[in-house]
Length: 517
Image 1 (cartoon, rainbow, N blue to C red):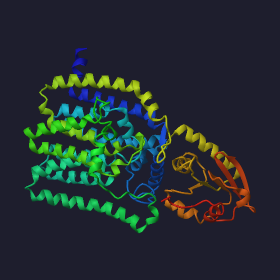
Image 2: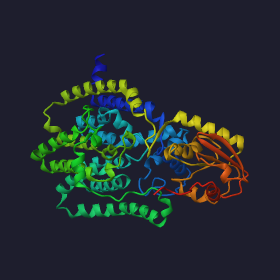
Image 3: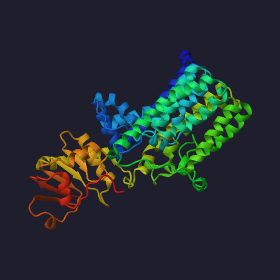
Image 4: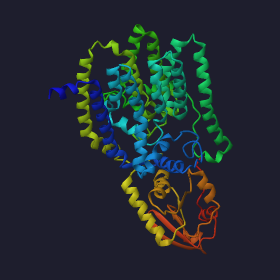
């Protein structure tokens, strides 16, 4: 018995237990939310994962956009190859990407002898509210840039090492081009590295040598859409800044920082106060690190004035907090720099952490269903929507039965005010991936698969299902073989069609276009 107790006093054992708790916590999130629900935008990642797995690369970014690389789709390939369904493979890959920086920081720090700091890093995801877990596990590209931020740990433990500079330069530049929200982490680290290496010419040379080639990746990716504008259905907004917006947003900080304070879940914005105080204290102890922290906090506040940061709706699924997902990792870095300020022995740290982590684990476990229920009461928010995977599968099966009965070649989904774009996207993108032998599909507007749009507009489908269009058949079609299967939603079958898709829709007074602006 004494031998067993002594084993549990070992740091490696404690770290392993903490690691297991964090993994179990994330598994609970996956089971309660990610495996059960899918977002309309998630389906594009499903499609790209299928394409990448077969070596097909239609365009650099998220289909139909000139931004947002789909890193999660690459990570999902091994899981899809062993037979995992999309609704499991993609969320698992998102979780790996979002958790990786914390685990890498923890492992490296532990090997360097920073035991408590290592434990803090591995615990941060567990100590944050469930909403943070949701944001960092949905397959939307929110955490792809932060994946690369994990490699900054090598520059932090060896800030004068040239190989560390190379790794940091790759980490910062790749993080930026995958998602600029990684700048919340990289800017403070950059400031610190610059302040301690400003007199070394090789520091500048190495960074320029690494960063420019990486930024060329973004240059050529953007250029693809300049040369092929038909692929850009929903382009990136021109970035603008308003100081007035900062003043306005300072009155609603939880709208931006609501899920980033460990333990104090109802006061998410309080993390900024903590970071600011630690930064001021650090300036007195180690001014270069202190400047790094202050620059990070300042940058976070300045971001409130950027128009893209204010692109949100009243939902966690399109919340401004997605722009600040780097704050937890920055919090860990600040603690790593300032741990000596807290005059506690390692024994007291371990005891306190174990009590806190087990308490938090059991509290989160008990409230998972209630929190998930709260955020999924409403499923359609206009620009984005969510749906239960089980419901989508059933609805796709119902559509497939109609397809088999009428020998359908092509389904055209026509969004309107009632059945809007995200609603139709579930069927347009999801059903062909969930149902084998599903026919070709097309959206009459906002079709993000440009190669499908260009091909189908000139193709002729012999038997066509038009889903969602309200058409007066008596006035529009007189010499066509048409069947009205349903009026809510409207489902029309056109048999023995001899017109191209574009001509058929024109005859039905349905616009076939890329967007509405």
